Image 1 (cartoon, one colour):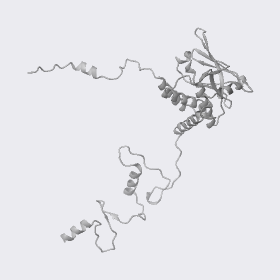
Image 2: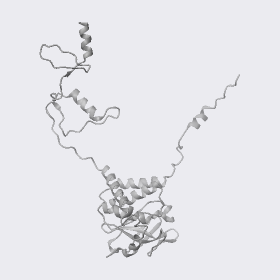
Image 3: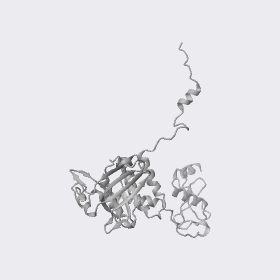
Image 4: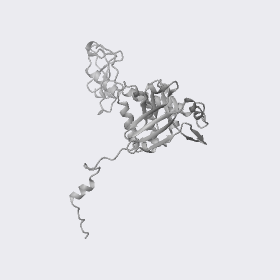
Length: 320
């Protein structure tokens, strides 16, 4: 005879079935993709009256898409070219500018320099750093600062900096400074003439004079417009006046959706209107309905009503 299995204590079984983190444990840190997603939608929910609102959305969207797709961080030239076309579709002039970035750590005074004012191509690899300058709004955009090690640990996404008008020249600003926590970012911009050889390289014109960056920029601008449109308040409906008998006018909105019903909202609204409305019958109303749903003909006064079902008619005839 087999021995009965020994049951474990109920407390141990409950502990093993318990899933999820304990209340006293801190939540896991956010991934880079989750941080990019949070930055984008935090900017979408910000005040739309700010001048920098439309400026910061394209680089945040490009950063979120690149993080989601797993693109490498060393993509400053491609992102800048895409953003220039995206800003053009949004009505903002933008330029790709060669930049040199100096990062200073305020804690120990250490300094690192990235990029150069004299960039170059070695085969299909670009050696340098680029940013986007918007002359209409006076903003400097760096879509890929996290590719550099001091900033990678912070993981705060693209840089969007407002440049003071006093630092502008006839060809735009010569530099800009931004602070991120304990790091000071100093951008030095090369003249616009330095961007021409960079953009004329075969790697940038391999797919035509505009390349894929124009198509990507159009897609980014369309996505930004769609995201902003989803956050607009609903427009008021057209005015309507009720018809005699409580019939809704043509401008009346449909009844609210019932998520517990399998029928569509339009079908439910029509059936509810037929049950409760006192409107006169329309031109398609050929007859009246019995309580069980069978339609009978409207016959002259005194003539007996006959069912429209021939099988029922034959049965009644045999019974008579």
